[in-house]
Image (cartoon, rainbow, N blue to C red; front, side, top):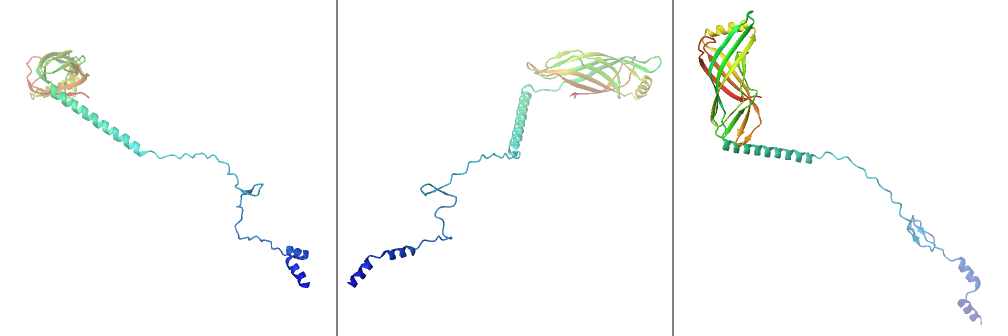
Length: 265
């Protein structure tokens, strides 16, 4: 009987035993070094599930504009193209000039003084002004086969002794055709201050039999190549003469004559 009661107690614990067991129930203790079950910064839903926080609001970024250094490559390209265009232009101009030269074969005109006659060379009453009047015959020759020369209005012919102009005259306007020779008779007149000093120098130079004179022609000229008339330019013809005397009653001999032709700048 006693054994049966013990076995019943073993199989059916009493109420006192159950209360003691409840007090001795082990509760888990949180480990401070263990990782949290819910990440920091997260939230829990109403059901207790962790919820990730909403993303931060987007901030509008203002682009920063940085000043760029000058593009040297672009400048170099511009310079290269400019040089190439200039070289190409020079080549084209050179080729055009070469073709024109072969087609027209231009030659410079030639000038000479055929004769010089003094019609007046005297001092005024008070010996301060020298009056001079010359008649000059000048020859112009155009040796070109396909080029004509227009001598435009405004041409001047003058005679100088050293740096003093003795007299001057106007050239007529005319056209000189291919392989043409034109002889012009030009009347020159003029007066010069300090006449007595100039006359004395001329008389002293005349004793040597060689008086240097400078004959200058300043004339606007236009060249005609085929049917094309080029732009008008000014040319200067200069003839260095040596005569034996300056006298109105004797024949004047031209002992030397050298004429040059160049554009006037």
